[in-house]
Length: 588
Image (tube, rainbow, N blue to C red; front, side, top):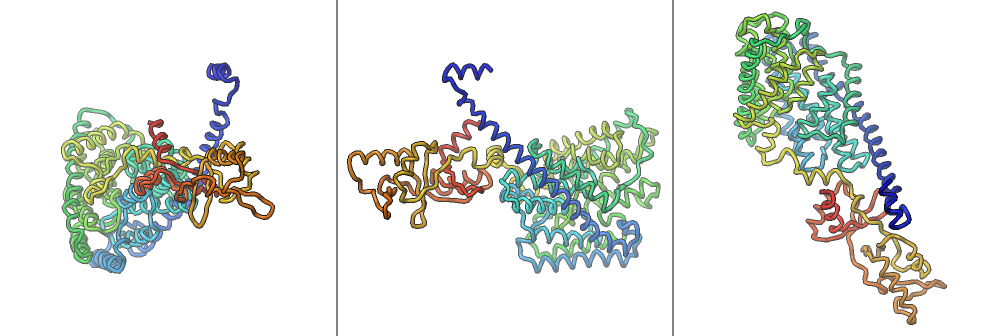
């Protein structure tokens, strides 16, 4: 009220408040949210269906060979285990040999690369390659997970929907997050963890603006997964009725943290060594993977595949005949070799298994009534995922949602935080995906200015433009005096020009001194030839960009200071470098 009274005293009206403009701006924001929510819901539905199809392609053949427990490759004969792994590597090498190099890029690092460097544009064919090659590797029992492939597929789906809807850049990123969250949620049936994964691992920051559509996508994808796949029970934790926070327990947790930190360092640094050989022929790299997997298939078949069969066997009391420690190290190295040498697949599920087995191993070291094997398996899973991908909240929520138990929250926070801290401080280790991008000379996150520019379209810096003809009737020129638009634009001989409205009105006033050279006639009409009446400025015309980042890059590349932009409603607007700089200074 004070602002209104002061404006009434100064000017006697409310024009300065721009109430209508503010209301329209808020209305447009809510309209954008409703559109993104609807597209997010559609993205969640399609992500759930796509993941159900992915499950079917992987597990229907496995069910034929193995039976009900589709991840129990140890139940197969040695010949079958070796034959499947070698055949999978051979088929993958054959496929990648016949594909162009640009289709070889798949997985989570590729999604982050396309998000940061290509505005989230993910080619469909790379997603198709990811779908079938990951399925081949998983059916063959290779030590990879399906989660990284799910992220790529979900992101591709979200980007495709955004492209079809012609959304601005912030809309593209929102739907990409919807696709990632939906895919992870459908794979694990953990809706909240899927959302956190999209923010912590893909965007490396929490974005409140995207939360509602992403949550909606995640929930719908989980419901579709429940309906088509059924409830996923990783393992039973009925034995954990309550957790006693004793000194013995926290001592065991600290030992587990040290074990997890060493395992995550081994996991990453083994891959770093193998990345140096990415230039070798795919036949050489995949042959090494085939040989190692075949050797492991003979002596350690529990480490094959992406499932939780080995961990479930430990928790159910079916002890293996050799040390769990050896099993943990073999699984860590085999997964690192498989992924590090370029086999398409995920790592999240494998880190869960590694951490779970490590937790069970630590629990067996402490003969105490307060140390539960199932509890420490959970803690190990959370700590290993958090340390490997630097996603502490995702790891915590995933464990709680997968087990439907809140008893593990306090000890899980202890091992997760310590694991992440020690991994960063002593090994200077970031997320595996971040390290991979850094190795190839790319950044995993964009700077704050780029992020801010991507969140805005050209509309905040656009100035309205009147579209007129190069020869305009004098009566229509006079009408410009009633307009509030400062600029006019016209096209002549395939080129665009713009003029100030005031310049046309000043030229019109020269008629008071007699006929002017810019007067032309068309039948009975008297026209003003704008090219002679004023000095129109040539200007380039472009289609509406997805964000202010693109328009800024255009100014920097061309060296021009203004441009005509064709908006989606077929109108034109003028964007100047000066107006853009003023917007950035005002915002800052």
